[in-house]
Length: 288
Ligand SMILES: C[S@@+](CC[C@H](N)C(=O)[O-])C[C@H]1O[C@@H](n2cnc3c(N)ncnc32)[C@H](O)[C@@H]1O
Image (tube, rainbow, N blue to C red; front, side):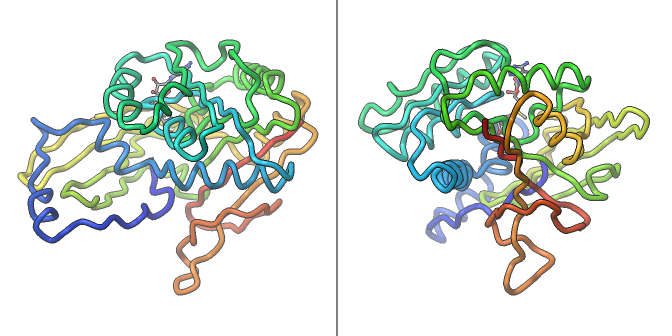
């Protein structure tokens, strides 16, 4: 996936940094750890989700449903944020779920993990409790490549929400989102994340992408993750969300960095039209 926003700075001593620098090789690296370090910013996601709900409804949300939850990082961040918060996650693959239980849920403090339920089920499965906030992050819903399939998922999301609930999805756009290309990014800890947009077909908007990781010792973990998606545009998503019944569907775009207007500032605000740039990340926030 592309860089979403800069990750929060961490305080690491020079000695620890030197040790980390050579920590990873293709033989020893854990792909889920690398994925979380490269792609996810769960703290920023949770701040955005709860802040947006609060602005719309004048009170804090309490129950989150994370579809395509993978290692459940956002569920963990959510329950850690407030002792009244609860979360449920859905994913079809036992491997990231088990990894998340061992590495994310187990690190939560004060019994917060008891406020999370993770289900090895399809993102379209009925939920256990109506969510205040339901999410599909990192473009995961792009795996629904047929209009009817995606519409059905949106319909189920609409029906599942609690009163005043919001359904939040992110998306990626701009010329770069339909270009066959690589993006390389050095990640703290001594490895390179490579986002490989290997094939795009304009007739179907099918998009084949991979994540590779490259290490300092010259080894490489190729196709650690692979995706077969359809690139959905913001306007067609808005239409679909309105068709299933959402009364309000608002787009959120990232503001410009003060020093470099070519870069984002990590702050997402409602903006119906957006700004046409090479590559952008946006959110769609839908309410009943
Ligand atoms: C791109 S990862 C998303 C991981 C994480 N939520 C994030 O934000 O980065 C997509 C996840 O969707 C899961 N998945 C694929 N099809 C699914 C389905 N129909 N229902 C639930 N999960 C599914 C995969 O197992 C994978 O863990």
